[in-house]
Length: 68
Image (cartoon, rainbow, N blue to C red; front, side, top):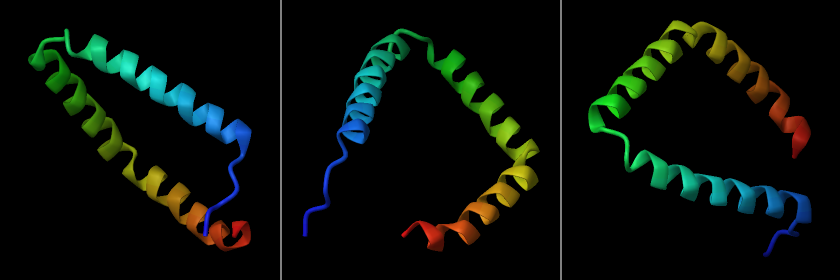
């Protein structure tokens, strides 16, 4: 069964895909060491905020049944 397509959502997805393609081309030029440093910094930030993120996720999961 096909789901109805929301035009606004479809445009958002296309915009995000175009931006991702442009970003991938720019990131291809960045040295691996710089990308690795950025990934490690992001991982550290996620770990530091894990309790906050898990609490927000739990709240979202509890609310999800009300959204279909």
